[in-house]
Image (cartoon, rainbow, N blue to C red; front, top):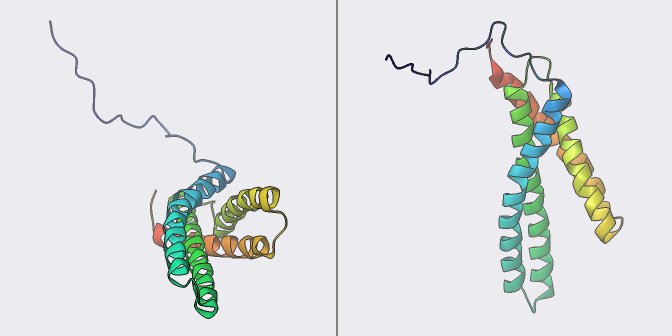
Length: 152
């Protein structure tokens, strides 16, 4: 009796799968922003706490540590947003533009802002998040579309 071997790599169906809609890439981008942002934020929190612990007793050093922590959180958010936007721009279909990456940043920061607002109340920091994340995600989307090149 002859054995039948299954192929390891499946051949694409005739015509292939249709490309995903742009709104689905917005969701993928928002999830990617969280996937990058959350672990980096954990590192930033640990580093910020260490800086503030070292500055205890000196008001000036404590203020400097707080500003450095804020700058570190801003960098971490920017890196996560650029990474999520890059994913959208690089691997999304040709119809996906940096605008969709910016929407992914807006969705991600909107969820965080909602949680912050419900738990801590209104804050000007929420407005800073709402302005920064979509801009950095759009930058990542633009970089991703430049790296897309000519592909099928």
